[in-house]
Image (cartoon, rainbow, N blue to C red; front, side, top):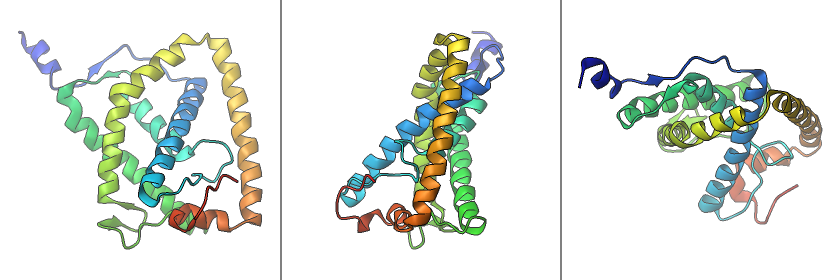
Length: 209
């Protein structure tokens, strides 16, 4: 085995560089937001024993997962993951996604005066908006994304004809904007919705609307 082949085992193997289009970003954002919604809903159910709708929007999606996936998608778009790269991918995903969650939490709190989540009192919490165990969880999810979900998304965005994907992206953006406006008005009129998000253990029954 020559030196270049051997080094590939310990470095990220890159595909041909490709510029990411706006439509691709919208598809990835939507796909990951929906998956994240069900992951988080399932997690809360396992922890508190209640099925509680997650996220402030009406639709079945959590945008924070969509933005997180976009970060990973951009970083690893033209990268083929190998087993030797698992530690590196895990560390990058942990720090990137954990920092994103922390900044979002601080931004909601000190800019918008909204507390979407709070980990005060939790084991090894970091400024109340993330914890070391959650960083580890983000690393695991991010690594799973790079190895399994990322290749699926690449095939998905390449399968759609460009004009179809552009139209779909416009429709999805429209849905998100309308949902955001309606949900914002809904939360203003029902502040307890945010409390249920932060404290799902207080919800005693199925809370969909």
